[in-house]
Image (tube, rainbow, N blue to C red; front, top):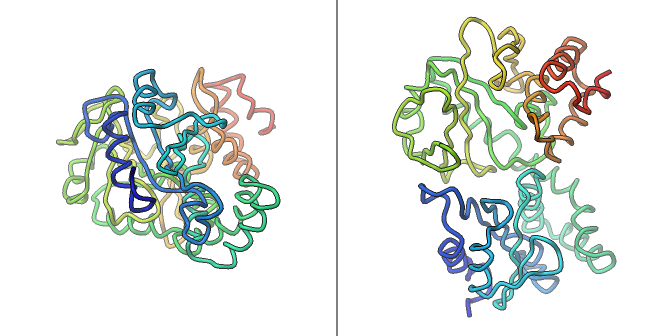
Length: 344
């Protein structure tokens, strides 16, 4: 039997990668994408309250029959809650929902509970009276405030310093862009998205020296070995010193001709002076209407729950021009989209 967590984490991680596959080992479309201790039971001051957890980002999200067999062979037993497994060693395995933002929120909560004795007592009181979910919800605003105070825009500033020498345009995208638009961190993030002009990508290996660089190709990681030709447009960069997020997601885009082009449908454009905004400390970011167009999903794929939350938070802050552009873009690409009713 493995020693209790956190001492037993390395052995459990090794076993899970051996049984489920290691996606980061490259060359396979499935396996462990990320794994980290979590849950109140992983906090020493709350170890008596609940089992410690392992939060697993797995590909595919629904385990294959072979992966289920591998979990059972390691001694994991399905729990009552969907996506949860218990281990006789005394911990719970939780398969994370990639689209909910739950894993990042749980990491922020764990950071708070490890740092604040008052929060620990509040969590304990609510947990004992109302259960785990109520305790998580009660501490969520405090955990977000702690995350904003201790992490905040630090990862973005770190990346901005890294990309400062780039001879070409770049800007933050996705959730970080929306935070920069709002002027505050609205939720923790799993990764940090940066758009880079495709013409400047030859400079990336020097800027990202010492980083692990991977290119997703047909759902499989391949090492980044040089400039990517279209339609390849993405590379994942990891470094142990990158704070608060799992990785940097670099997205190559054509930013020539004073236009930003929507990658999924290049007919949709914005003048670059409008698409590229400047936020706190001069950090460049993609206009919120363009970010929300990506978050609206694509044909046959609904927005993820965290994207719905982002829309509800950001849509009321759009100016008239941004609101009209997003409405037009959705009518062109997804004429039946339910966000249209809210955009008026």
